[in-house]
Length: 323
Ligand code: NAD
Ligand code: UD1
Image (cartoon, rainbow, N blue to C red; front, top):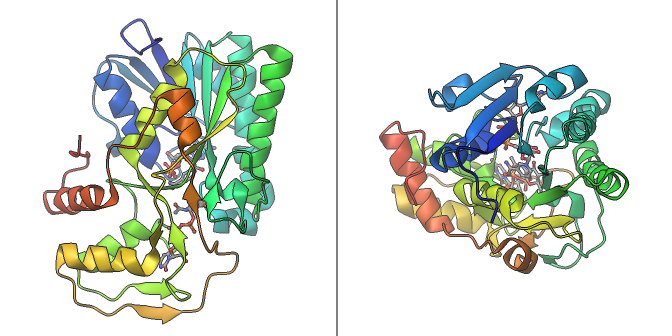
């Protein structure tokens, strides 16, 4: 296996963000050299450790020259930089497209220019939209319901093109609902886990949109980081394509609040609000392809991940301690 090590040099775009910063930690633990390209629009420098093996370049993935400079010498690229807000993509489809699709093309161009052996891009379960079946398989039809999801699907398609036309070894991972330390609860479109934990810690009533029976597949951020490393490390397979990264389990939003309330002792009763427009009813990943292709299986379940997040909050710890 092509496991990262001192002779390996990773570029992580969006490395200052929630998922990216956990990936950087994982790569450094594997003794890999890491370069981060980030414009710090939602990411933070404080998410990144002070480490001589880590180099930070501030710039945009939409800027081909900046990406080209950042990719020089890389043996693997992890492309995570994106405007990750579905709401913002609806409000500003052109601006998000420039970053979310344009950034992917810039990364692939840089991979081609420097002949980077492996590129892994962050896609999303959003590409499935609201399919009837609860269990999402990579072979399912896609129904992107927002400019964000359209850009993720287009990013996967352009990867396929670079793979077929230019022999770029590129894989796309479709993340489901990622949770863990450093997820920012500050906006309405923050992940529900971070919002609920933040409310529970203050014993404030959270809002449940819709009947709360909608389900999600919550996958821990350290498992996602491991999946990214696996996708860059396993022997190349021409049939790579898109791979689901989830826990394989469905949790209702009401059930999530119950679990968090029990864990924290919160007694507040959730407020009810009408369902968000475009809200997906059911979402659960079939993760058999990730197991077959990457040899990856999630290690941190929701209960352990939530308990760790609470502990991290109380101890003002930014890293995950669940593994
Ligand atoms: P995040 O906002 O914490 O991280 C995104 C990072 O990209 C930030 O550091 C931000 O500053 C950076 N960035 C944004 N625009 C940039 C630009 N033009 N140039 C350079 N850097 C830029 O979000 P996240 O949750 O860590 O998401 C990481 C990736 O995973 C994204 O591609 C997102 O679409 C995808 N994803 C996340 C989830 C989830 O549940 N969090 C689910 C599916 C897919
Ligand atoms: C998530 C991702 C999105 C991705 C999509 C793929 C996050 C923040 N968003 O959207 O980028 O495209 O998966 O399927 O990870 N909810 C409440 N109360 C709240 C907040 C949320 O009831 O305060 C509900 C929402 O209505 C939704 C569920 O919780 O039904 C999950 O919401 P959210 O965490 O925002 O994620 P998704 O909408 O699934």
